[in-house]
Amino acid sequence: MSCIPNSVCKMCRRENMKLFLKGDRCFTDKCSFERRPYPPGQHGQQRLKFSEFALQLREKQKTKRYYGVYEKQFALYFEKADKSKGVTGTELLRLLETRLDNVVYSLGFASSRREGRHLVKHNHFLVNGQRVNIPSYNVQKGDVIEVKESSRTTNKVMGAIESVKKREIPAWLEADHGAFKGTVKDMPARENITLAVEENMIVEYYSR
Image 1 (spheres, rainbow, N blue to C red):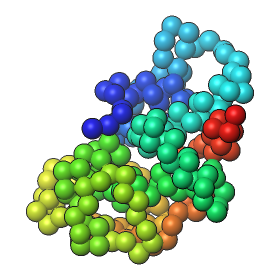
Image 2: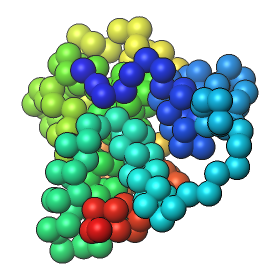
Image 3: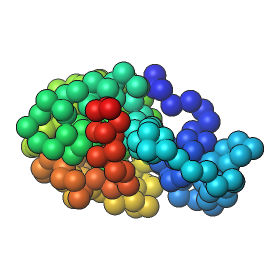
């Protein structure tokens, strides 16, 4: 289903930041990154000097893992962003941010992006009244994302709505949890994307 393995906490430690891959656990003191904020492995606590290429690779890996996409998918997103009229790095992040699985998570209908992918693939959501089960589907301004009526009592959806208070809904989205729906108010600007990444380094990685 996803390129994210079970040992997702190691990914956060490798990228030296929380990627929020385990839902509610990431907001508790059980979070592995909070307890061991250094890279995994026997050399994890040593000071290492990274080359320019290594830094570019880490930024690419961090972004890929944050959104939970495959290497080939990520390269295709970059190719599409590179052909767009906007700034390549910003367009890349916008394409990833507007994926349906990410939007479902951001609206608070899933506790993680991985869970969002699972729910989308199992036909729990409608976009503008039509069933969409493609996690990579890119939403557009004005789209209405809605939990299918028969899925509104599922434990995962109800649990996610209950715990969404721990995080903020992005400014470019509007959520109505009482009606189990959300609206794309606008396309995300760079300042609306909270991922701490230097996207220009990803552009340099693919341009080498």
